[in-house]
Image (cartoon, rainbow, N blue to C red; front, side, top):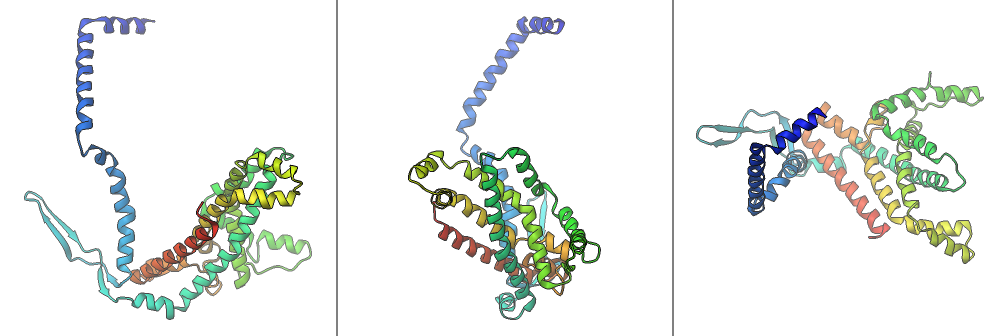
Length: 339
């Protein structure tokens, strides 16, 4: 009450009123002037374009540029000097490069067997994991969307929890679970009377292990998206189908799937992009082995760029990966429809 009384006394004083009127007048003047500045909107949006140019546009363009060169090492030569009178700015060359034209692309297409192996491994994971994850995600979403299911919130949370786990953390857990000697999975199999499986020692089983790991983590993510799509399907469509005598399968085929087509397309395209970017799982769980049987394209780029310092060739592989994923996404979008 004392504080309110003091505030009332201050606000009722003549000095405060004069200050408030003057401040209000100046604020109105600024509000009148600001919209007349032509470049002001561009100033407001400039932080986005600056960050976009520095952290996305320039690395992308420079990667394409670097793919036509052989990286020879860091350079101390000066690329550009800007003399501002009182200040002189020198921009050094990023790297010492040797122009090789299309040699990097010819090498990855016709000579590099390890690149072909990484492409095969990534394609295998894609063709097995993406359909499996989409089907399981849709089946899980259909079950959780059913009216007779209780505690839906609890089940949704439990299934979606793996998405929140760290890549390295969950990959380490799968490394321990599928260890051939001390892994829990083989221990359970042997307890049940089955033979132990060389999960990480055999090429095909190692690929299957990666499929299981990636599916476990991203199943909940796709389930949430598909469940949201299911909840937007109008109930009147199901009622009309029931009036026409449609069975449960016919309602799913002729009502649910057509209504979910845009959502399914998004899930497939995003899963395709994510699968071709897979790195942490093979890096932690299998290390790319055995005998490079699980090395992926991104892991191969990492080896070339940061372990062998073949930045030019690694850039060419990166460009090839982007073109491949873009082509697959375009085909999927065209096949899925433009709606």
